[in-house]
Image (cartoon, rainbow, N blue to C red; front, top):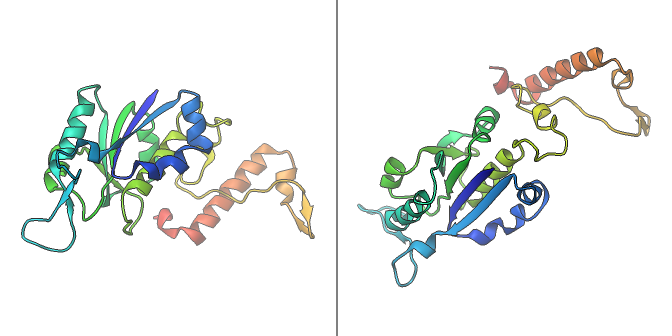
Length: 225
């Protein structure tokens, strides 16, 4: 069973995304354990502060190394972790192949960035992987951690009701997904493509591949490179 430990300044932000749908079912089916750790609990400051001004000035605040180190060292004393992730705008951009690989890990830590980031020594001596979910800046790493968790957990065998569903998602083969249809076969004169009603699985597979390539060229030409 996978275990995910998330270090955050705002554990309550995960109540919504982790209390519903796929992640909730995965926890109930004992496919994953998710533990939230309030970084302020590891602060020795009487006001529970975990940030300070950066040396040499500049705007913003930085997360201090002491509470982060204390929290990670505590967790590492309990078990061996495969990876310690940090959410950062300049981290490796998440993609499906990476998520497929991460879904095979057993124990991981995710440190949610905040303010102007963390003391660089955290990244140098504690973090093993850094990831970003896009070329933009969020107010904190909690949303990125939630996205990462959702994307990884759904890949764990036994989490989805249809085991083949995750394998046919967009990006699994480097292409976006083809168009999909359901009943009724005709609505307002708009018909489902005849090939999908033919029952010929070879023709259907060929059609889906052709449509995936066509849609990828139009919508995500960067993937074709």
